[in-house]
Image (cartoon, rainbow, N blue to C red):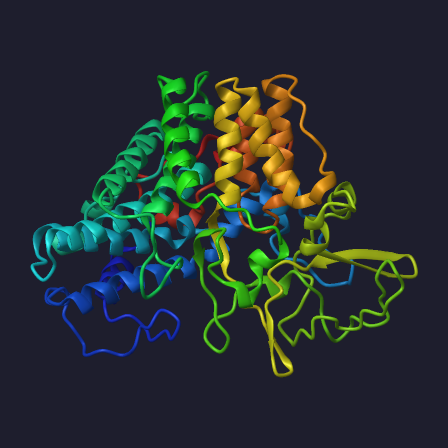
Length: 507
């Protein structure tokens, strides 16, 4: 974790930066003790917590997408650029090249969430009980989301649930934290998400009046609950012969009930797949919780999945149409990340998700693809990569429900939810699903995840969860489960002598 100095600095940064989208306008400077005196101050702090989620978007992408085998790991792109994160993409991460350092900087955000929980429980008097519960539900939901990423990446991690610095803990030794076990970390996450659900129990399936679906909600909590309990029921801690849950069937049913409540309230799959991500169609019926981006305020990183405008000339599409800078990308455009041509080819031409996600290009013997999903919008002559990035949408709910029903051997419902996804993807002539057995169904669900959620930061996690994680094992060194976890970088290890390295990376 970070040094004591950085922790203190982070905790003192309560006056959050200005941010037009999240309405973080400059305010008077408040001390750490009196910032929570008005409803406006509380809301501003929570707006800041959501800005921090957005700051971590690319980390979430790295952790949840890059290792999944869908991206090309060669060091040079089809268009001749040096690519980024090839060690992660090729599953060659090591102690020398850990890919992501300092636990993705998630602990600074967690410490701010801990501060919010402590203030709400012990200080805030400006809110009534229902208002206080609303914010506590959000805080516990977001904290479980962070820790769920940490668990699925590093395994057991230090569990920090109190704002230690504010409570008078000030020595580096006292702030050091041993790693909890994977089981202990999972139990912490479960407890947090159940607290979030309890605090939000009086809330409707609705969204924040000011910030809409870019603010955490009861619906997001229940979607995350389903995700967590599926992981608990289906995934084994590293080195264990059994899954996290002592009663997997109970956790599957818990997940199913949470996901069903979301589906019953919000289960809409708009017919236009590409339109879900359109800049002018933000917060559409499918979106549950998304990270927001806006012109002239904040862009995402998906320009790096396109092409360099200065050299993208003379290329044509499959029909022979010229593609000279078709997206009008500026200097930010580049082919730093590419999805595999073989993956693109494997998607049926009749699957609408193919054209919505990728653009193929050709010149002589060269052929390649760039990401067409999250392509942003034009503002005059400038393209802004400002599509929102979904964390959860109703397609997640449908496929997680298919997983639940498959575990319960309810073949009819497995068919129903898989075909809901396929019907939108292919239209009237969608490929029907035929139930054979649980293992075959898991692979069918996994395939829908791969094509449905391209560039949404989830596929590596889905590989680990479905089909007993066997597909993820095929991608790591020696098919060794120890390499499913990431190394803790040496700098972080050196700052906390209580941390222990994951077994695969001990020399």
